[in-house]
Image (cartoon, rainbow, N blue to C red; front, top):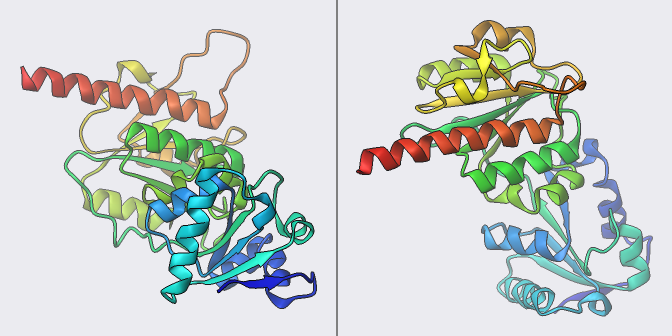
Length: 281
């Protein structure tokens, strides 16, 4: 039976507000998922929330009703704690508007290089220093659509870097954060892991040797892209097996990171599909 919460001073409500900050998310190893689509995809991917908050007055669609029923079933089985809250309270705790009356508290995902199982000729995507959560979310959407095997986000030894659990990442990814392995790793052990698994490293840079469409993007490959402001760091450039570029025909000298990612990733997919078609003839 769901517990009704009505006070902004309630400890659980205060904790939701704390989770809007990265320091608290990292300390508690959990984050907030808002929205009907995002919550539905988290549940679809087998993620069991620690807590769920429902505003009945805002549940207006069949999809939202189905999610509420699923959460009630999980609560009945003792798998989560379910609360109902008022519209006024939901407006206070929601990270963004138009969340459809559903808010989940989910644990951090248990993804790491040690647990990543690679299929033959994997296509990996490495984001080095991507600074904008919205960009990372859009990149995850692309990776999911293209069938990328994993997205790896580099971090510093002090764990600084793009926060994959920022609510804006969850929102911009449309739930793709839950559907594919997304791993945070430091650069040095990541490079060692790539070499151990015989994965080639292709770095996208304005100084690339050849256009991306002229490079062989088949086989075991990790595509590395950096931030729009600074690009990839020097160690990636030094370790690259090859460097590729996106030719720029106009006066601008770079693309948005998520756009550049989509361009290169879908070229890799095209090449792999074409090679597979030739093999099957």
